[in-house]
Length: 345
Image 1 (spheres, rainbow, N blue to C red):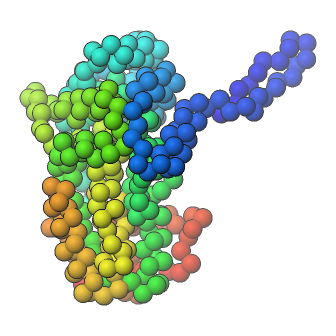
Image 2 (image 1 turned 180 degrees about the horizontal axis):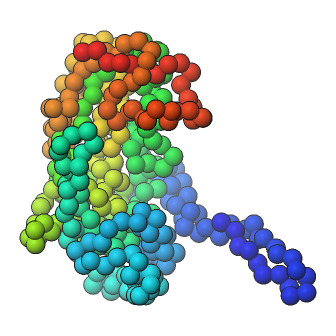
Image 3 (image 1 turned 135 degrees about the vertical axis):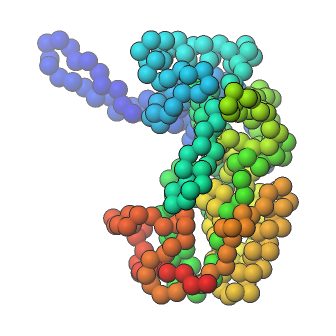
């Protein structure tokens, strides 16, 4: 980001100042470098960074860009912009957080169709004010945990996505790994135990104010048909902070994975693939996945669990690794060969 400086009235010249002004990005780089340099470091002083006005503002910008629906308080983004005022909202949030009076509302529960099925997926919609606070917390926590995340994780991470995961699958197939274990974690976002998730966060963060805020977010609960529930598991799908928390928790699985023994793991949030050299290795990999998930209090979704052999050089049909037709065109790491597929049981 650069500043455009007003020119003297008699010059008619506009001067562009190229000095970087993005202090939030600088903060994130600092946190990432610090965490990367010392894997054993635990951060004690992050609360003041969450309260920073520029961090809260960036949180608002992220929430506004998503253009989401209102939560249980029915407050809309447009109403805040046109009636209440963005600055007033950020001032209120900063004051409540600083004084310890901030309490998140329950999230509003809705159900959205799952593509290609008649099933519906539960979605939790926090209030706008709570989404802003979650976004600010994510801005501060994400670089700390990004320093630890394994290279096998691709979902909801900066500068990583489906194309990158698909490239790994393509490369490993051409190295002779043609057997694939495909599964996902059953009800992952609603099944993660709160106490064990907080323990995972505490491996890096011991700032008690930050942990208290995170606990409050997890315990805020959901409202459905006028009834509020406060489960002791789950980080509601639809919350700004939830994808990061999912990755923090499942990073324990990534760290425990042995590629030499079980094959190459590719994880996209709660969706899992293991690319193996033989059916026997794939069966061993599935057994290992079940054990690791059980240790985390989770389980694979049996209806989506299978072992398949990649055949031919046509299109890959693994569920979450299949971008739309033409999506790889122009991608900087477009596969050198045909994308493997279809799949044969």
